[in-house]
Image (cartoon, rainbow, N blue to C red; front, side, top):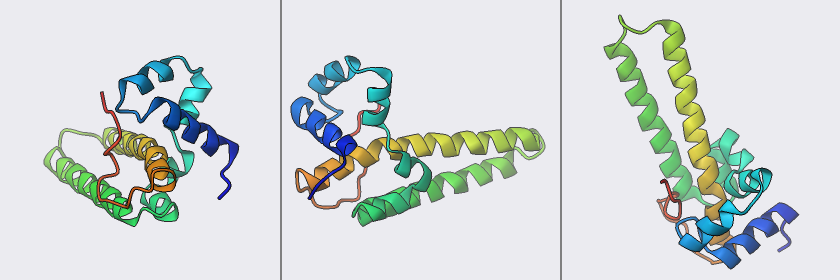
Length: 137
């Protein structure tokens, strides 16, 4: 199967330097330019489409996990709104909601590239943990 230049660049980088959880990856990642870091670390499709993108790349179990994670965070968010209803204004509530969605989008966008690499190149079967190969801190 033929991959785009961007996917080939990502796959070559992962093959050479390992996954984001490895020290070698971290050192090599620091040497990239800003735009190379951005494209290596982010997937725009996953940022905007969330779990739908994971279904599209053939990771339905991970898509289910992402959907349920998003749903759980939204439910907690709405309970917090009810709890702090008299304290927070509509604008603050709206900004918190937008911030949460952006943070979740970035989290899913980071997980998509490594997940697709593990499926296509390493042949890893689909599992329920999309964040398995992601380094958070």
